[in-house]
Amino acid sequence: MNGAMEFLQWTKGPMFQIALGIFAVGMLARLFEILLLGRATNHAEARAGEWLPGLRTVFTRTIPDPGTFRRAPFDVLVGWVWHLGFIIVLLLSVPHVELIAGVFGVSWPALPNPVIDLLTAITLAGLVAALLHRLLHPVKRRISIPQDYLVWALTFAVVLTGYLAYHRLVEPYPLALGMHILSAELLLICLPFTKLTHIFTTVFARWYNGAAFGRKGVRS
Image (cartoon, rainbow, N blue to C red; front, top):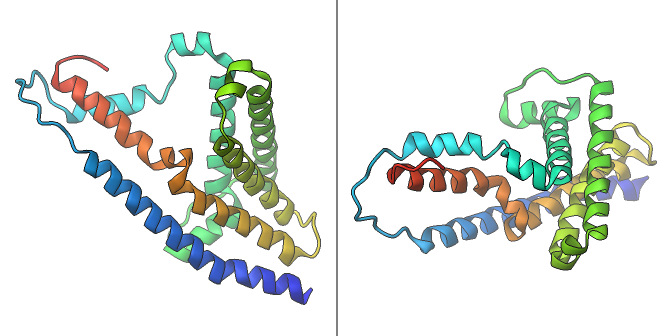
């Protein structure tokens, strides 16, 4: 038990500081990398504004167009399922709401535990389905790189260990909670250096594309 408590304290203390530091430095490096790419001066006369077309594109690109859904219905459905499940569990489960309230001083109503349990199960099932599809689809399997499987494993571990810890299905409890915290910290460390960066860059990329087309008077 003492070892489990020491492990939990390590994940909540030194390891958290390390993960947060690597995440901050990594994201700053990514930001500078994007800024250094620059933006070529557009000398053409603007035919329309940029802000509204950019914002419109942020929303329209979030919902898959009918052509994309017809070409890859599995990717669209499963992707939406596990992404939404992950976000809802992250923001609306009781422990996370309490954690956010303790750190930031703001809170909102949490969903009932049975609802969170159902969403957690759906999220895990969606992640498993996505992995099997990647392994069995000849094209996806060929273009997949080790990073894709690492990102999947960390995401799956965060959700699974959170469920196990909250329901105390692994003993001792401090070990289960420490594993959940550690998996979240490893995900945080990898975020700036993997495709997980899209969590922060997708909105800006969509706005940029929409704004560029809007300036030309073309709808994106």
